[in-house]
Structure formats: C-alpha cells, structure tokens
Image 1 (cartoon, rainbow, N blue to C red):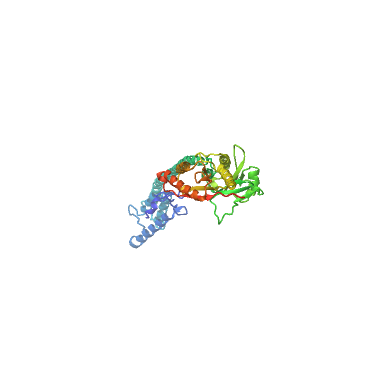
Image 2: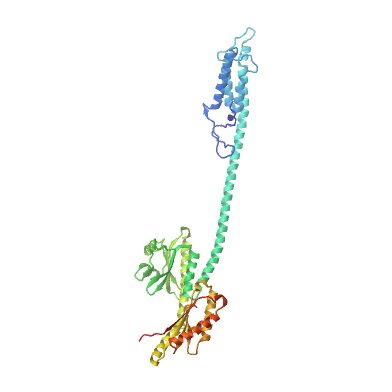
Length: 467
C-alpha cells in the first residue's frame, strides 16, 4: 500500500502542510472513494487471484486461516476509514464467492451451510465498519486539531501584524514628535533671523522662515517698488524650465488682487487659479500689522502634496503678516536712521554727511578751496560672524575718530560696517593722500589680532558737484 496516502483528509477539508505555508490538496475521489484506495484494491486482488490461479488450488484460498483477503479489508479501513473498509469487504466477498460457492454436505442443514458461506464476509464487513469508524473519528479529531492550529496561526499572524502596525505607528509618532521639536526650534531660529532692524538681514531671514513654516519646493519674495512688485529672492527656480514672472506692475490682475485688495490667493479656488495663471499655488500680501501698509508679496510656486492642507493656508497667511510687519519695521528704522546726524559709533550718518559734503563742495567752489573724501571698505565680511563684523566696525570707527583733524568729518556710509568714509575740508588730493596713509596705519594698529589680515581698501577722490 502507499504510505503517502496515510495522511489524506476528507474532501471538504484543505489542511495545511507541515510548514503551514500552503494548503494540502484534497485527495482525488472516484464515485466517492479515494482513487488511491481503488488502485490499491485492484492491484491487491489482481495479484492475489493471479497467484491463486497459478500456484494455488483455484479455490481462492478457501480453508486458509487467516484468509489473505483480510489484508485489504484491514489496511484500507485503517488507512482511509469506513467507506473504503466496507468497499474492501464487499470486493473481498465477491472475489471469494463469485463463481466459487462450496457444495452443501449431507451433514449440513441450510443454516449451517449459510453460516459457512457468510462467516468471513460478515466478519470482513463488521471489521471494516468498526475499524473504519475508529479511523474516521481519528481523522475528524485530526482535522479539528488542524483547524484549531490554523485558527491559532491566523490569530498569531493577526497579532503579529497588529503589533507591527502598532510599532510602526509608534515609530511614526516618535519621528513626528522629534520632527516637531526640531521644527519648533528651527522656527524659533528663523523667527529670530527676521527680528532685525536692517532690511537686508530681514530678507535673508525670510528664506529660512518660509522654509521652516511651509517646506516649499519653490518660492519667491517680491517687494513693492512704487507701483511694481519686483522679485528680490527666488529659491528652487530652474532658469531653463521655469518661466515665472520676475515682476508684476499695477496693470496685472495678480498685482491688483494681492496689493490693491490685499487678498491671499490659493490655487484650490477657481477664481484664484485664474488670477494666478500658473504662477504658483499660493500668493499673499506682506502687510504690516502695525500700519496696515503692503510692502510686498510672498509667492509659493511649488509645494508638496502632503504639505498642502487647510492649516497650510492659515500658516501662510500668518507668515505673510509676520514677514510684512518685520519688513515694515526695518523700513521705518532705515528711514528714521537716514534722518539721524550721528550713528551708534558716534560717526556722522550717511544722509547727513552727504548733504554736508555737497554743501562744502559748493562753498569751496565759491571760496576757492577743495573738498576731498576717503572711503574705507573692508572685504571678506561674508566669512565673518556678526560679532566679528561689529568688532571690525568698532575698531575702524575708533581709528578714524582718533586720526582726524578738527575740520574733518568721519561718517558711516550706511552699509552696516561695510563702508566708512572721511570728508576732508580744504584739503587737496595730495594732502588727502597723506591723510589716507595716516588713516591706514591707524586702522591697522586698532584691528584685533584675529582680524589683522583682513583686506581693507582705501580710496581717495575729490568731491565733485554739478554746476
């Protein structure tokens, strides 16, 4: 008999293999019986009857005890259950009695003769039923265990998936919390960068602030210059592929809406999409919360899909107001600073010295004396920290003040420590060259050690005025 058939199951079940990875196919059946059982039954009786015909008496092992036909009955009942066991008993009965009925002797009555004919078939049938039912009970219990195991395996897999999903959510939340902490810190740093009184420093900090709050792929900053919005900063633009406008005049619909109506545009609104006309997804006016004036516009040309939400639009509105207030404050400070006579370093301001130099030049033209100026420009300031730039400006200011005559005017040319100057009244170019050499020596001596090698350019020229 086939040993592989011992683990077969009823047709309704599709048990799992030993590894639990794939279901074992249901056994093939013919007329309700397993095909392998039918094949084994046919082979056994073919061999047994052939041996009886060739080597035996031809009486199909009549009188042999135990009878060889017990073999298929017991094996099929043990292996496959009741159906196959009963079938084996019936086939064995046919194989034994079909055309092989013994003659009734004189000493036998009818019942004795009937007992001789049916004794072994009845025993085979009873054995097939009893042993087959025991086997069927074992198979049912095995299938129940398999079903329980399969259910337990599925529950374990579900628990595993749930655990992994929970772990993934936990890790995502941890990453998000950590990212939010970094974002808060970055936002704080970016906010500090626009909390300046110089317009240039504010515009430099605007880029960091926009990146921290909006995370855009492409954005630009426009400032209002008369009746034109001019681009002063753009990030992420590809000059070869992008054709975004770099200015908008008062006749454009976008200018009228953003500056004139002071309204924020969002591409998700049909009307706003028409106004933007492919220039971006968000555009908002830079409005000072203190005065209500519009100083420019921030435009987001490209934004990630996951970063575009209702909160994004609200954040953009707050961002525009924040930047507008900072720029307006810096502009007011610049305008006020231009009216000052002295700077923080006790030097004349650029606006004051400009008027004075023009006055002295006109006066010298009438009175017959010359007015010259000396400019002092340190270079490489971008590589210095804010503290080093302040220290450099202070050192140059001290050196200039200590080297001048009573009639000379020292000034800050209004570039935040990037350029200083001296106006020499009644001094020609030759005398100015001598003062330049003296100034250069004094400046070099006043510089701190770490800034001693910084390049500084001294330029002397005559102050000219138009007739």
